[in-house]
Image 1 (tube, helix red, strand yellow):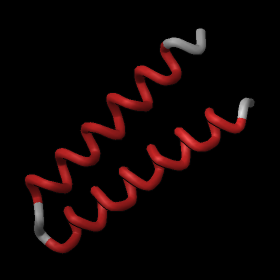
Image 2: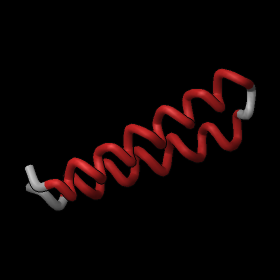
Image 3: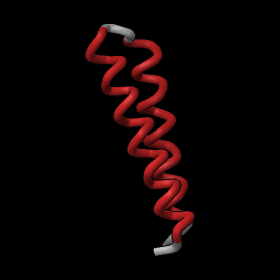
Image 4: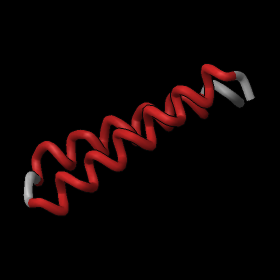
Length: 50
């Protein structure tokens, strides 16, 4: 795994963590938006890796 892949994976995990935290404190719109962005980024990153 290239270091850039690790950096991107860290960004995806950070988006998921912040999105989950926002959902937990009641900021539903922002939390869902960050989780969706993280999911799309993950999908695009690993779809191109095949």
